[in-house]
Image (cartoon, rainbow, N blue to C red; front, side, top):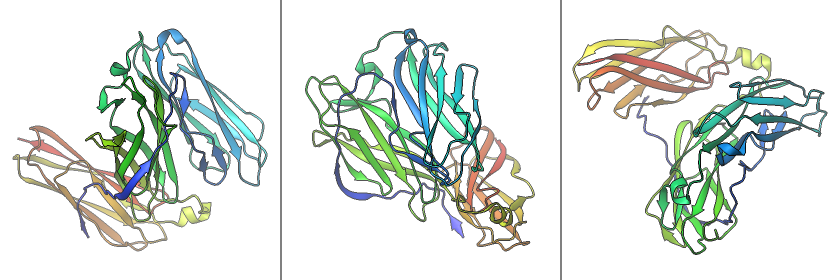
Length: 370
């Protein structure tokens, strides 16, 4: 099978009306509960403090976890990504139907920069750690709305038109959020048209008062047959008029193994690659670089590559069909080096697979462009 690495895009026709309301510059968090492995449900997995001042001092927030299983759940440990973040959590077992908490305090003393800190929670019954995030932007002085939201959408503004929603699994969804500001002296109403399939947007509520700030929550729901890296998009309408710009949301969809037992996971497909890096040596600009990656399926189930995403637009991939247990397979990457800068070349191919052991495999093609 020969595929092109272009991002998969689907569009949902129609116009969706969104309700918007002004918010003061206060902490906010992604709306919508998120289930993890049918064991627990978090009220959020991301807390965004928004724009804060260094003079605000330490910032705190709490993640609430509900036990939705029929057995007690224990939060074994929570590890922070740096010493600037302190964390406490419920130490006793959380009984079915009850809730526990993970609370954190960020020192907010690292300077006037964006911050994004991870809390890695190890929870009983869940094979992979749960990643919680706190983020925001610290400022040395108060800035105007025009400075804070430089990307203009007619009378409104956002920090960026390119948004990231992270990883989700088939059958699931993932939410995140950003702010949208009214930069004018009159209320504005926000709607969206040309919305991609699988994307929903919710701005609360409407209209945005003059000089007000509202939150825009974007949710990506996995669409059957859509794998790997994908771009979702919508066109913002301000007071019914097109802004002429498109809002882009990036997300990555991988396979879902949450309903598999430990034994089923152990017997699942398991690719073993001879190497994950191929060096093509020196080549002239505009020539084709070709790399072949051999592997063996050491698992007991057929190995399937759902999709390959390549981070260079002028590249294609040849991938095998289902590879049976004990059989070998081959992935061939072809790269047109036209337009590449001279010097070291690095192209990454990301495989989305059905292997519980290796749901995502990265292959690297390197070389030197003269």
